[in-house]
Amino acid sequence: MSKMTDDKASEQWWLKPIQALNTSEWEALCDGCGKCCLEKLEDDEGAGMLFSIIACDHLRTKCGNSADGAETKTVTCACYTKRLSRKTDCIKITPALLAESAHWLPGTCAYRLRWEGKPLPDWHPLISGNKESVRQAGHSVADRAMLNDGRQTLTNAEKLENLLANDEVDWEPLVIRDWS
Ligand code: SF4
Ligand code: SF4
Picture (spheres, helix red, strand yellow):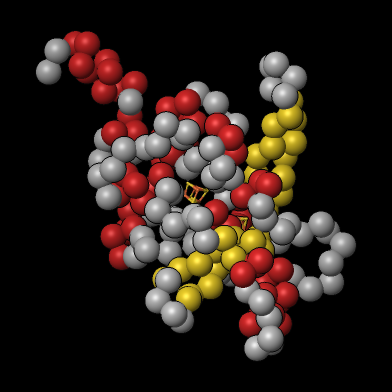
């Protein structure tokens, strides 16, 4: 391999096999879309895993402004380092988990894509150099999810459970079908 190719390969570290990523590379691979933090539903009519618009209670929106003054909006986990104890069904993504079961992650998830040997999309921040590109491409939950506003008495998971107990609920407004 030439020096230039070596340099290019180290710049594009995300092309390495996923098992070879170090901790900071692993964390940086996440595109921050927040889709994995939505409560999910298994479709009994064969559509597989569906994402509801109901987000985990710990998901928060961060608003700001870009250098050109445009509004920016990203999502973040309010308890990331303690997430596994704060939310018992939060799942830590690891290579072993991907080997066992990647199907519950969205098809756009950077971990799933790299596990499947696929390239990252143009809108991934590592490719675009801009976190906001996830939202601009329509892949952030920032504008679509129902987030906990801190005033509710039931958790979002409990709200979803109550909805599931009600046969009359119209699910269409509550699921996102254009994300796979
Ligand atoms: S605890 Fe954090 S990482 Fe886990 S599902 Fe909730 S928002 Fe996502
Ligand atoms: S779906 Fe994948 S890329 Fe998106 S926030 Fe979750 S782990 Fe990160």
